[in-house]
Length: 374
Image (cartoon, rainbow, N blue to C red; front, side, top):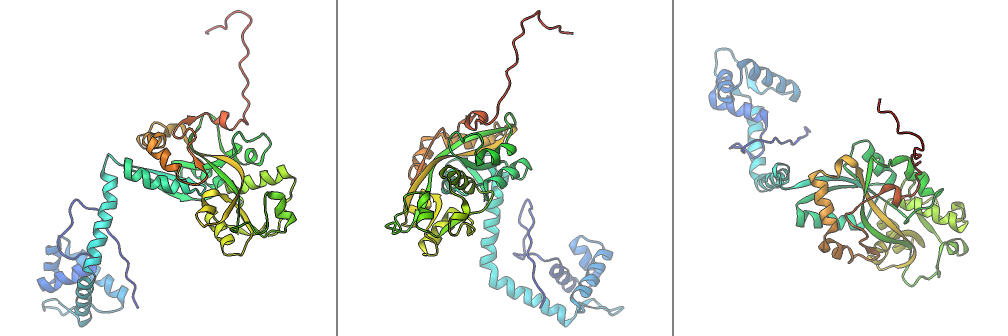
């Protein structure tokens, strides 16, 4: 069975005729109407050599004859050629409503690209429920479309540095300590002066447990003491970095925790594992636990940042985003998510102050005569 591949083109106006155009069908229709290859070529605005060559190519591709090539006789379609035209008319008639809807959807989507008042920002980010809320809010209130792809924080910043996105989203504890896993993970990826961070939100991370907390889990030590079945996040995710820092602070090795090697791809997936009874605990944002009717044991507040290159900050789309984040309307909406609060949302923050890992030498004051200008 031959397969059908759909494609589309952008034009100044939609051509009349078939809802979905196909070059072979147009060739066959022209031959039928004109009765000759030369007439078909003229009606299509193409050369005789091109039309003849395309018909021969299609006959080879399909393994069937399309034209009765009798010398001195008007060109006519073979029975197979006639059946192709019939099948295409039948399909177009049946699918006309869906095709019209598809046309409309594509045209609405591409209208954004031609509208100077709308903006698009590509964002690769660590998974976050507030970003999903922001995407809908920014599109509805500011005609700003966030093209979000969720991935681990490390991969998100790497994508930014490689030019595959405009913004990246990552999260750390407030003022993460020197020597922490957070420093070892993020410092090599970020450069003061080149990267700028934008405040987004403060959120709460903790242990998701079954409703009623049947194992009585009150902290990380209880994961070991009660042999709780844990579900983890993948290496390179911000939550995995946070988890390893919390365990190091509590003097716990990952291998002491049952299920340490079980990986789920998102906060929601971790919460679903607990909700299904296949796990007893995992570290998630509060919203993921509350949204599934589960209990939540707070462990740490953390700051979620958006980071971009310095050159992006004053671009129109980035300015619109910062205005949206700083608006009272957005910050009130953010506050409806459990465990979230706006914290310097939309402000451009000092990378070296928020993440105090870099030390800069101060220039020594000159004690002698002024330096030569030569």
